[in-house]
Length: 219
Image 1 (cartoon, rainbow, N blue to C red):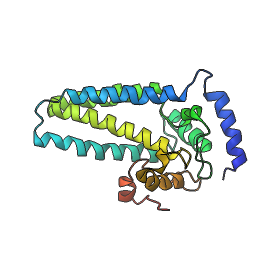
Image 2 (cartoon, one colour):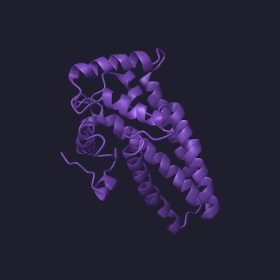
Image 3 (cartoon, rainbow, N blue to C red):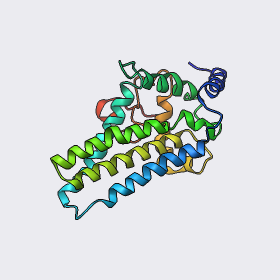
């Protein structure tokens, strides 16, 4: 188990090796929610006379995203997979050494580098997953279903980033005091226990799949 001292030492090493001098956490946050939010709004503006059946794309996409979050976290983020080594390195070898269940809080905005998805990876997420699936849905179902999928996917992604950041804020931060954050944060804190991280609480947002697949560890 990591000690407070070893966490502090790793944080200093991580900042030297992985946080560029020009990095600004506030700009990273603005990019994530600015670009993601703009694309979400743009997708929503493309909707035209949505039929009742087409609205099912929203809850179905939400559930699909919850499963993808669970699978990605339980799989390549915590187990080495061919072709996905960098995902494992960034999550298990870096994020989980930067934050343990005993040292969860950011020391400052520059530490957002260890929490938020890199801008390049976010851009890849939009162009490599959301848009191609959207095009497929536009062909197989309807343009409205495609736009609803893209908007809901981005909404889920931004919700993921926001909640994950909230779990790593100081307990006295106004966002950390929100009722939803107070209810979900202990689940993520338990996941950061080195004894549990590869076995429990893989949903970072809402523990739907953790409950379904028996990996939910309540605190």
